[in-house]
Image 1 (cartoon, rainbow, N blue to C red):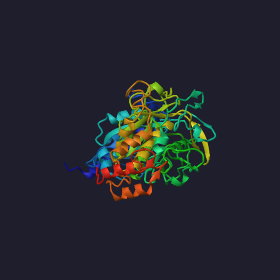
Image 2 (image 1 turned 45 degrees about the vertical axis):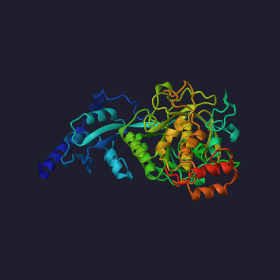
Image 3 (image 1 turned 90 degrees about the vertical axis):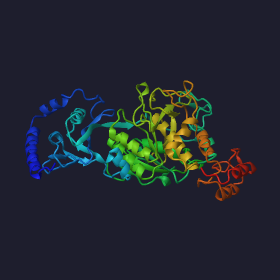
Image 4 (image 1 turned 90 degrees about the horizontal axis):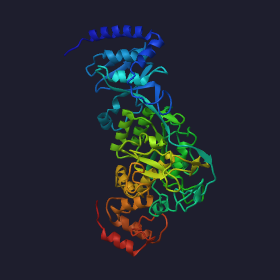
Length: 519
């Protein structure tokens, strides 16, 4: 049906008058109208962590729909046929201070973004104090022909508890090697660790691996500054990725990537990976739309693994779609299970595409604050863990925030050993090699159990045994690497195929038996 442009102009003029009249109503009347939708889902308090931003509304347009704002702040919402959507236009014009696209940097995979509808999200900026859940419910259940859904922008925060200054030494790093040392007031259980030394025998990481850290920033600490890549600050719209959340992101980065075996400070798990800092918090909290932008940006920059030591009490569609975008792109996403204890697991860990990580103490017991329930996939050390702080300092931290990077770094090490395998598939080996904690077998409290980095790497490489250089076949290049490393071997012994600490005849026999192997 052909529609007259003149008729649309007349309609818009009428709506301008209606909206202007409505916007001149008292603040009390508007507040009353917002509160009338009492059936809106309870998602916490406004402008507080665990609640929602009272000055932002997330809106997903129907395919082909569009939105614009005139100089006198009239929002014009058009459906796929270019016809004015009266319902949405009035609702948004009454309250809106501005409308902007959600993604200032559009996702690089346009086809995937379009399939998920990520390209159709906008942010409607509202006066502080707006009852956004009620407004979102009203718009979502209206007869709008241009808006598919509207939702509040949930506020999350880092998933840590506290930090205290501490001197640094490997002997204190019970998470990497638990000898039964006393940690805080807990007597450790020997071998209740991630078996880091077992992993380092095969690999200490690769510079071809990129680990993105979605957090409040990462300081250029002396133990990984040379591997810190240029990042992005989503809330500020800049490239300043200085840690603005009490060294939270810097401590996360230290667990993952502090250089080891160099007589300085501590040892991280992956000594060679590059770190991509992505700031998605303003201070120590932020909204899910910032998270979504950061996750897609990190994916588009080529991140192999993404660490999310963050907790959001509620999910939003844009957040979930961003997770689907990263997962479909082959990126492994690791997240803290949150510090809500028996209340449950927070987002993004609760998504099935994300590896949710709970927190253990040195006695192999689940921390009382560690989120348990659906969404916990594995456990890792997360109580009194020593890591990097500032530019050249160290501190102890607790929480699922500090547990998650142990799993992230383990996947990074696996990627270094078997780059042929998509990172999304490496979680199979991570989970299959876990050690039971709590109830026997997989359960809803501890998931698959405590991770074992050494065992995970060995299981992953078993499928490509002999392909030492990760080239896809076993041949001359692999033989050259083996002959060049002949003899006793300590770190990075990728050619030690029989895993006995010596590269010799036994390893040569294995390699020759698999000559020409092509997965």
